[in-house]
Length: 332
Image (cartoon, rainbow, N blue to C red):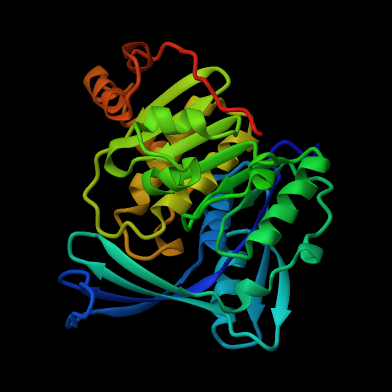
């Protein structure tokens, strides 16, 4: 296996075009917007920046970009964050873009034009020597993601997959994933069933599964049992990139050798801070800012943990922080 903390992110980069409006338009509705801005984004790039800013995890990124002006701010932002780039340059596809409507209550609606991101192929994966974790998402071709996970597993590299945007996943991909990160909707899609969060988590054939629950926090299941982390209270301005911040900080913490509980706490704190600022990468906090938030909050309130446990369909022992068994479906 590679160096414990070294991370390779293979995924997407988009230039985000953001319009602020009173509310997100309904189908067929035209909404008069206000402020317009462009931000560096894309799930892969956001997660790479979050990982690098978390500290203790040397971060590289494999990314496909067009040969155009939109690529320049994306490359600049990644390098400024300390991410070492492996760029696949596409002359026949534009750099990926995303069009985002951000409402006054911090909700958003996003449409992505993948562009060069769709050109990332299995043969583009660089050497995994010295890499401890490979972080993947689903804004690049699924067959490419599957090939990368397979190669990483064969090389003894931890595979972390953020299954976003939501889609059903093949068993061959899940078999090579060590840590799966999803939100509530993505969990239902991957699990392919209804039921409580705990019931859906137990059906996913991956050793460690983390589900983010927005303002409620997160819940995880690993071989040791269930893990709960309440959210940090904040006044949300823009939730864009909060989930990506969570993923990057989580992987960085695991790479540093932190326990899952400590990694979840740091990831929740970082994603909370990301919601207090505009933009995706622009909102990702530094390690110092995350540590300051953590230092100002003691252990979670028992009432919050019980509320979170009940919401997830978990037993009382989980709310008390006591490890409890968690059945996991075995791969077919």
